[in-house]
Length: 467
Ligand code: PLP
Image (tube, rainbow, N blue to C red):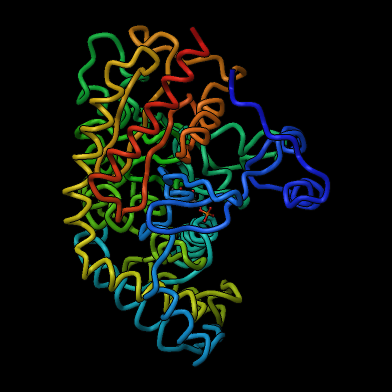
């Protein structure tokens, strides 16, 4: 049986959590019975609970703590900035050192924009959701400013994940983000998930499936009217939807359709950015040249909240023209480019350069993929092991040969997560009982072995329960 929850003692931290905290992404009724897992501290790729038990963090928190859960240089960078200038804003042309340095570093490191030129400017926000909402508002603003007021609809993908604010949640293609929220808002459409394992048809090659995905996109644009479709938002590799690596030739074919109809591409690099897929950007892994790039999470190694929207010169010029007409670009957050968060991000990017984060991911990534395949490739409870670089998924299945999923009501993934806790590993279940693996990027080979070992014991326990 799934390990029983420990009873919640009166007045304990767990009881106070249940009494006062409303948790994101949690079954709130079940939480009242089960209580929280309280994490007290972190070190390297591990976190420790309030009882002192250690867990390997197989998902870097929320795919974000790329340098792990301790780093003195980031602490020092934050402390120094807090002493020098704890807050200043960027409204009405105000600026400060960390914002300037981080903007320059991001433009220097950004992938090429649509058209082949370098990216041009950076706007800062505090979360991936805010970055994506900002990108959408920029596109609407741009199309109004450039005389195309009808070009406003947006396409994303079923199972894509772009966040939880009203526009970002609408772009997200997962039922839990829409149901009871009255979402998606009008004008947002979801196209085919590029998951060959499930969506590919009998006898179809991966390339033919990629063509079909691009044909679906074109049909959607034509149905809605190209003059009304402004943009597509997409993660180079889908993360929270289940780590879905697109089929070969997918991105070349998708981009050809978008360009044919002058539909902008927003690359959501919130998970893929900063080495995760084995290149600095997911865009580089798949030869994507976006109009706008959004990033967050590993931008500061998650030590402080910060996200960025990197725009091409074409986009910037449209925004600049619009702002001249109106007198301002009327968008921005109090904490856009917060100096302490920006200083930590600058230091994070310097650490990535010094440790050669891309080289590291290119070395450890294939090792991790091979270790997962070796442990789970033929496991009777596993349908597919997939991934690229340092992001992967192990999809649980009651019938691997038939590529079947469990009934979602059985909550198989969440049950596995509980076994993971018993064996000292934090796991993350995504839709379709796909267990996502996205460890701190600093993870080394012997830690990969330990992670896979603990993960394996959890899957074996679940298999025994389900026998
Ligand atoms: N985009 C992607 C690809 C993400 O994975 C996430 C979060 O997981 C977001 C956007 C939203 O980011 P945030 O939770 O910081 O709003």
